[in-house]
Length: 303
View 1 (cartoon, helix red, strand yellow):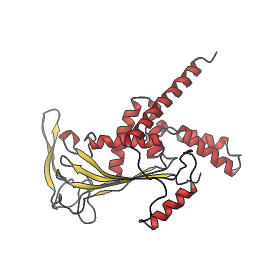
View 2: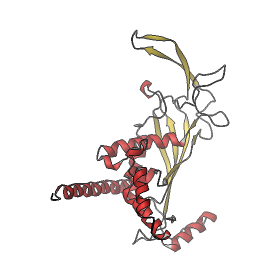
View 3: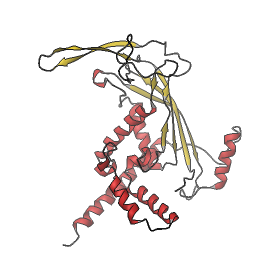
View 4: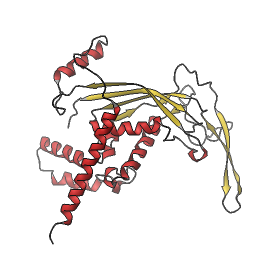
């Protein structure tokens, strides 16, 4: 189905390295330099891929939700564990191939929405686009905490039998120093309140230094802290019916985009994050109740 703009949340902040950070670019083929350099931008400055941050965030939320119910978070790495495996999608398309094009599209859209797990509804799946977008994190400007220098550290592979260094297994790797600040910019569009709440809980893990990034985490590397500076929120849905878009609000928002000094004709105040988080908790209770009732009905079917 064609998407309709409903809301948008922009999050701006800083990601600080509490300890040294290593997000490797792979083994170097250069004759001189580090064996394992970190990822850098075109200017030679350190870079954190948005995919690395997003992947760590998704993994943490998946671990939380699997602890509540396995159906709440599918395994994106294993096709057979997807909430909608390829063979199930193929069967659905085959069963509905005789529908008119518009009806077929509507049925497919509803099928995907109804059967997508909670995490994939926000982060995306092979059948559903992600609502959460994050830019690559570059060194903040002005570069007050970046002095153009990397740290080099030594590593060695240990022989488990002799408990000594393996022959030829000495290597060095590059890290970004602690105290380096990166620009954090993320956008979430057309998210439900409970999806925004799930995101707030995930970001809170970064705010409290609970999710490390990159390699060498067992060595103490990769501890980061997210500091959110600003959140810009726009919601063009009708106040009395959140399923309906108010065209006047949409037009006013478009006018504000080209004329920033124009004030919106409605109160564009961002809800408190705990309001969204509470909506997420309530949604979890609802989904658990539905699963319990479904299991009960299945168990009570007479033979």
